[in-house]
Image (cartoon, rainbow, N blue to C red; front, side, top):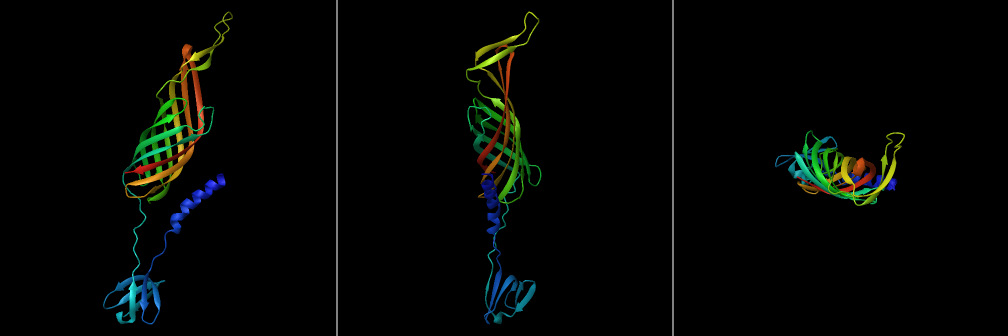
Amino acid sequence: MKKILNLLIALILLVPAFGQKSKKDVVYLKTGAVIRGQLLTYDLATVKINSAGNLWVFQPSEVDSVSRALKTKPDVGPLKNYFFDSSMGVLVGNSGNAQKAPFSFMTSVNFRVLDKLYVGAGLGAEFLEETYMPAFAQIQYKFRNTRFTPFANLQFGYMVPLEDSNNQNYTNYYPPYSDYYPGGQTQASGKLKTEGGIVINPSIGFQRFTSENFGWFFSFGYRYHQLNYSGDNDYKLEENYSRLSLKIGVIFN
C-alpha cells in the first residue's frame, strides 16, 4: 500500500512536467529547407531566426512562409495575499475510540506573511463519541507559486466540546486518609462532563487551481488530540488519540 501511494504521488508531480512541450517558430524556405528556432525579425526587409545558437538571415524573397509558435501563458498561480479553504475527511485509526473513522470538517481563512508562507485560523466540527468544535491556528507553506503545487500544513489548537458524554460506567478511586480509612474504589454511572483538549495535525498534500480564484486540494497527515472528562467526587479521565487524517477540500480567494 505504501509503495502504491508513493507511486501515485510521483505521477501527480510528474504529469505537469510532461505536459509542457517546447514550442518553436518555423521558417519554411522556397528551397524546401525548414529552420526551427526563435524568430527575431520578420518584416519586408529581412527575416532573422535564431536556431540552436546560430543566427540565420534571409531575404523575404527566399522565404515561402513563416509559422509563429503559440505563446502560452506561464503556469503562475493566484498570488493573492489571502485564501479561504474548507475541507472534509476522516480520522483513521481506532485508538480506543468507539468510532473507527470519525468525520471531520474544517474551514479557515489565511493570509500571506512571506512569499510562499501563509498563517491563518479556523473552526471545524468533528463527531467522535461526542461532538467537538476544533478551534485552531494554521501555518501553510506552498512549495511553488504555480497553479499546481505541493504544500506542507500545520494545525494546532483546542477541541471545544459541544455536548457532554453519554451515560457510561466509570471507577472512582479514593486515596487513603489514615489507617482507619485506607481508601478504595467505587463504581459509578452517569454522564461525564467533557472538557476538551489540545489538537495537533501536521500534514502534507497538493493543491490545484482550476481558475484564478478557485481550486481543490488533498492532504494526509498525523493527527494527535487529547480529550479530558470529569465526573462526580473529583473524578478525572484523560484520553489521548493518534490517528491518520485524510482530507479533501476546496480553496478560493
